[in-house]
Image: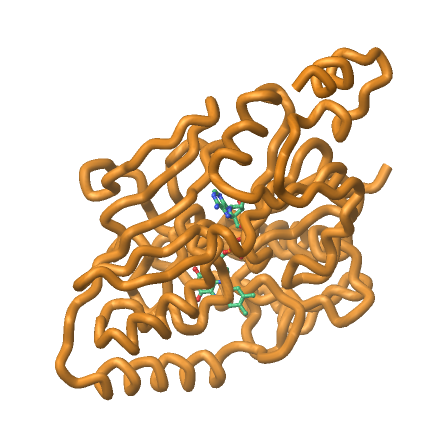
Length: 312
Ligand SMILES: Cc1cc2nc3c(=O)[nH]c(=O)nc-3n(C[C@H](O)[C@H](O)[C@H](O)COP(=O)(O)OP(=O)(O)OC[C@H]3O[C@@H](n4cnc5c(N)ncnc54)[C@H](O)[C@@H]3O)c2cc1C
């Protein structure tokens, strides 16, 4: 601790020198492109995978004023080309457990929601089938209130363990609070989800679950591009409207900026064809918003979260 204090107060201390003694992984200038589905973006100034809850709590308590970004599985983010200043936290393996407790599933925030769906299937618990095609983590899915086929995370959550901005951990019962809307969670952006308890519906016949999953998979394969670098739906569906339809009506299917293109198969999906920059993707997205506004009077709202800064 003494050593940390002298590092912290050194006049030339960099952010990485001012970190408290952590047991987890700490990397300076960690490239972020490989960690996101879009495959673009500059480095995180300081990237941290905490070893456990107390590591994370110490980090937050010791550096309360440092900008902090949380990255899940990177399937709904566009990290800008200048990278992410401050601290980027990614919850890894120590936070990825999934287990069944009666008719509930207890999952760490880093667990993949697809794994949650698989565990639920094995336990003959229905209600998680919609998660089977969503490539996110539990934490990211709570923040985004991820959903599909008219169901979303908020339908299943009975308890969320969060670390608040002061480093303390608290448990929330989302059924008692009005915190979710379509692709939106109103808990403060600087709170970090650690664990969730989700309610399942026991069934006798596992085929019921398997058939529903197969049906959802078929529908996705029919309507969405497969095996591409994308973050899924780029814009939220405005009330009673479909974003993909508005984009098609604006004549933008296949539109391109640099290496970024509007999918032919699903116009609300933007694709990095291989050499796109984050700037290409964001510019294409803004072009879409402008054209949809001009042609149909609707302002599309980004569903994809833009993180970090432009290249200077
Ligand atoms: C091919 C494809 C298909 C998709 N299909 C769907 C779909 O059907 N339905 C749907 O809703 N989405 C879909 N998505 C989008 C995405 O998978 C979901 O939004 C997912 O829930 C994001 O989770 P993530 O772990 O990747 O979060 P990230 O993309 O890493 O982060 C998303 C947001 O969550 C925050 N966050 C991440 N972890 C935590 C945490 N532990 N605590 C607090 N905040 C956190 C981040 O700061 C960020 O603001 C799709 C994406 C792709 C690429």
